[in-house]
Length: 371
Image (cartoon, rainbow, N blue to C red):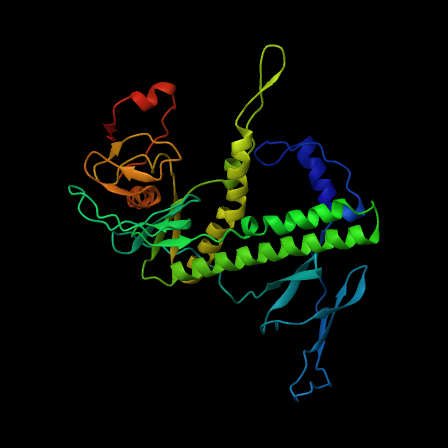
């Protein structure tokens, strides 16, 4: 009830900034997959030891029940014990493909609030990170006045560090597209509202849930690997993946006929962006860094891949150009060059690069040095 009221208030009055949301649509009971319980009574969770033993003699999992308002006693799998002195304040019940889950919010007033650490970034204790999708090549870095020895190690990086280290991306959805297409074709061939159709739909949902969990596990492993390094400050791109994966605006002529707008090519890029999960990775990295006493700083990524990290020369290049080649002799991977520039912008070595207006004649203009 509260969620519906808040939705209508945002539609009529708007939020704190005055922005109004769209008109809320009707949602049936089947469409509500989560409901929140803002307050639980003390002692709502009861845990008793399981008297039965396994065949090898080991103890079984404890038997636990939770008392939910207007629902009653619900049995749950008590897989993680609640720490001492913590009290249960709220709960979030969600329905997923493989069953029901409950998330408990705990509170301990003796625990101080976490404050972000204040660390002064230097050349030695900082690292720049550039997230990407394209095919990357690692090169041996030498002086910018000489030619590079190309030591290519082909990979598709999720993130490239300013020291040249890359983390290969795990395209979970791309690797499972064929299997999901076969299951969808089988489901479409079944009669509507039949039991076999529902079983296949549930199977597809479980497979999507498996991909989601594999992606999240990969992000946690990548963030842990970064946090375990000696660097204390991580400079990342301040990006919004939701805006990057938007559809192109339709184009119409004078007669109202729709013209090609490049959405066919953009759809594949949007799919890869959503499969990479940049937003989830950066949020997990910020959480892991704060837990380890380190900090994550977001910087503006405008044209960081267009500026040379050696001589500050700006030269516009297309997204398909994956190698950065400058007149000063610097030849390196595009994402590596961007990661170095991100670190320079975050360390105030290079001023924030302002976004330039794109024009058709921009490619013919001579390159110039960033002031």
